Each structure stands twice: as C-alpha cells, then as structure tokens.
Length: 211
Image (cartoon, rainbow, N blue to C red; front, top):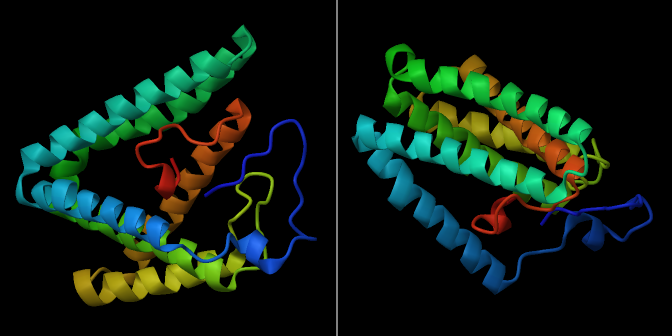
C-alpha cells in the first residue's frame, strides 16, 4: 500500500524498519493479492494468449477505462485551467505512444509476445520488486514520489525477472531489461500524476496492486 502525503512531507528515515517496509502481509491481504493474480492470469492473460482479437479487446478496454479514470480523477481534484493543461500534457505523453503501440504491436511482435511481456513485467517483475523491497529494502530511491520504492527492490526484482524470463520464455537479457526498466518508469510516471493530483489510487478495483 503506497503512502500518500498531502500538504506536508512525511519522512521515513526515523521510522522503524517494519513501518518503513510496510510489514509482512496478513492472511487476508495475501488472499486478496492471490485472488487478483488468479483473475489476471485466468480471466485475462490466458485468453489473451489464445486469441489475438480478445487480446486487442482487453487492451483497448484497459486504455479506455484508464483514460476515463484519469479524467475523472482530474475533474475531481484539479482546481484551475493551468492544472487541466498540465494533466492534458501528462495524458497525451502516455496516450499517444500507447495508441501507436496498439495499432502496430500485432505486426511488429505478435499478440503472444505482448502477453509474455505483460507476464514478465506486471506479474513477475512488479511483484518481485515489491516482495524484495518489503523484505530487505532500506535504501529509498524516490521517497517524495513513491515512498516505498527501494534500491534493493529494484535490483532484486530485476534479477528475479531476468531469471524467470530467460528460463521460462527464453527472452534475451536485453529484451528483459528493456521491459523491466520501462515498466518501472511507467509506474513512477503515474505515481507522479497521483501525487500531483493528491490521490492515492486511480481505482479501487486493483487497489492492493497499486490502484
């Protein structure tokens, strides 16, 4: 669960280790996270792997839903025209490359390769980063932007992701690192937008997985 600070800074240096790392997961939280993963894998990723059209429909639906939630958050939190212009810039910087990728990914890499990328980065990479960070992380790399991100989490997540992708999907090292790094950049990008708007999550649907 990410920490949101509104109107004041919250420092982590003087906090106990268990508070800084978020502590261990309780049975209920672990069950919820497991349920989310099962839904993502069984309900989305496996059918996306089987059908290119289903993959396209899911991706377009997520882009449309993400756009709707983005502007709903902006509408509820923005206070003036300057903030709307700023959020429009943030939105276009994400949306335009995303639409270009949606238009061309089937010709460039194919839908199954894209599903592999989603598994490598979202299911394995993001989870490994979070688990390692919670377990041994103590060097915070961007506390004002994303207070729980640690150097140990990033490095440990990269190692685990690389081992998984190389062994299971036979991905080259460079491809794995590109997917992992750009996934981390995207995560921080939207964390910056959330901090700018003063919200914790865009949506409650996947709130346990970062909202």
